[in-house]
Every structure is written in structure tokens, then in C-alpha cells.
Length: 223
Length: 280
Image (cartoon, rainbow over all chains, first blue to last red; front, top):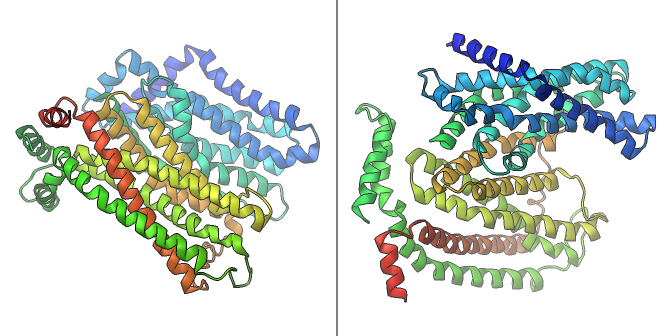
């Protein structure tokens, strides 16, 4: 079973690495959105420090959501997805593999670039690490929840806008605790651990349930 | 009921594991045999048509009584630690609307789950018919809340947990309706939006908890103190009557809407054609 998982994972990674511009667009979207805020609200250090965590997390939400559209779309267009669904392997595992590949390609780059973004917002040293860690735990949840929406809106007109309507409200807990952890880490003596416990709990729940729900959604969309 | 519907029901039963020892299957089959008469759109259409005027009369009567009682027979200020003047009377619409908005989301999600499990078309139609009324009540609760907030808090909007939760509930309704209307194939639209409603129902406690408790470090008391206990019985009663009235009103709108949906979906069946021929 796990051989299938790694087979799909490897295939998706290889395909994506042959068209690297797709990867970079998500990353640069994130960087551009984050860079626009200081131009809009003014470059006061104090303001930026307060706004930073929330802005970065909202930008991460948007970037991950924009990338979701492509999660199943290419495989749907050339018929690979239908072939995958005909295999005797459990569909949730296949979905999980695709989500894992998707996160490695779109979520992980955001985590890597987070410390640089933190510098743009003059966040203190501790917050830079916390921001990276919170994105590391939080962005997989975004990909997992988003997979359900991507499966539901597969092949629909204006799927991207629709996807944002469906998925963004469900992202709220991740946003609250992800941005909360970064904000708290800037305060001396405050404890960010409860935030990470909650994010971890969300990640575990999403890991268990969202492949099942996304697989059910794929079956509905392609029956 | 046509023989077509019957064979569909029988076919659906075979969808489950169907083992003779499986208690769940036997239970599901039994429920289905008992209820499947009313699960058929063709039977439900006239039934809903007969019930609608009764619900409408009940709704009109209770809403009139509730409004009269609330506006003229209650004290002109709300007591307690935070006395409020006449403007408190907006709770006779605001609170029932907020309660109904949450209740109807539950109704919608339960009908969606029933539809996905038993594969009954009527459940999907009822879920779809409940959504606009639920969204309307959510909007009404937000709007009346803003009207109340202005004299009371001095602002139209505040990021209070209850307000935020209600706003998110509104987004969930909008997402359900948007997904349903974006899919042309009714079967896929029904099933996809049903799944979305269930995912939403699972996420609602997590979302509301995160909104209520953004800082887990100082989240000892999860509950907002309910003010129900120190409310005057007079005020509470008229609020409950209003809630009942809005509930009956929901029955009326949902039944009327589901009748329309049934007619559109079943347009090429014999019974609808006969009905149309009779009406003309």
C-alpha cells in the first residue's frame, strides 16, 4: 500500500520539477502579497511588527488556496485521475500521496522563505523561528482541507473563485492559531506551546479525515 | 408512486453490505421500508402542499402574538447589571433569527447525511430548500445585531465571538449555495454540496472554538455567560413564541421551495405532466 503512496508521490514530484515555473509562481505570489502590505499601510516598524504575523498567515492561506486548483486538474484533464480511481488501491491513500506531493511543492517553499519575510517585517529572532515552525505545522493542514474543496470543484466553470468561497471559512482555525503563535512568540515570557499543540491536533485530525472526505468527493465528482 | 421509484429503492438497499447478520443493514432496510413512501418526491409533493397553509396560519398567528407581546406587554427596559432601554426589544427578532440560523444549518447537514447514506433524492432537495432560509436568518441576525449594537455598544460592528461565528456561518451557507448552483448535473450538485455541508458541520465546532478562544493560554472559561437565567420570564416567553413562529415560517418557505424543486427535477415524469395538464 505504501509503495503506491511513494509511487504517486515520486511521479507528482518528478512531473512538477519538469515545469518549475508553476512552483515559483505560488512562492512569488506569497512574497508579492506580503511585500505589498508595507506599501499600503506604511513602513512604520511598530505597525509592521503588529501586522506581520497576520499578514504572513493570510498570504499563506491565499497562496495555498490558489495552488489547490492544480491539485487534481491536470490529472483530470488527461484522464489519469480516472485510471487512478480504477486501481484496486484505496483511493484515500492515493489522495494522501497527491496532497503530500502538493504540499512539498507549494507549502514547503513558503516555510523556507518565511524567515526572510520575517526580516521584512522586523520581527524579533524568536518570532522568525516560530513563524517557520507554525507554517511547517500549519500549511499541511491547509493542503489537506483544501483537497476536499479541490475535489468537489473539479472541472467546474470558475472553479478557483468557488474554491475560495468553500475553503477559506474552513481555514479560520489554522489562521487563528498559526498567527497567534507568532504574535505570542514576540512577547517575552509568553508560551507559544499551546498554539502548537492545537495546530498539531488539527493536523492529526486532518490527516485522518480529509483523505477520506476528499476521496468521497472525487467519487462524487467523477461518477 | 411509480414502479420506477420502487425498483430504485430496492437497488439502493443492495448498495449497503447486505449481509444477513449485519444489524446496521437490517436496521437501515427497515427504516427505509417504513419511510420510503414519504421519501418519494411524488408522494411528498401533495403532502407538502396540504401542510403548507396550516404552517402558514400557525406562523402568522404566533408571529403576531409574539410581536404584540414583545412590543406592548413587556417592561420598557431590560433589567440586570446592564439596563437597556427600548432598543432591547430587537431581541424578539434578533435572538430567534440567530437560533433558527444555527438550527437550519443542522437540519441541512442532517438531510445531506441522510441523502448520502440512504441515497434518497428528497433529502437532498430538502437540504437545498433549507439553505436559502437559513442564510436569510443568518443575515437577519447579523443585521438586527448591528442595529442593536449601534445604540448599545456605540458601534455597528465588533469582532465579538458571537458576531464572528454568525458571520462565518453565513459564509458556510453561501459556500453551500454557490457550489450547488455551480454544478449543472443535479445528482452531482446534490451529492457534492451534501458532502460540503457535512464537512462544514464537522468543522463548525472547531471554527467556533477557535474564534471564541484565540488565546489558548488564558482560555479557562470557554462559555460566554448566558444571560438567559436572569431574564424576565415575560420577555423570555415572547422570545420563545417568536422562535416558534419563525420555525413555522421556515416550514412554509422550505415546503414551498421543495415543491418547486420537485417540479423542476421531475418535469419529465408522468405524474408531473398529468398535474400540469390538470392545472391548465
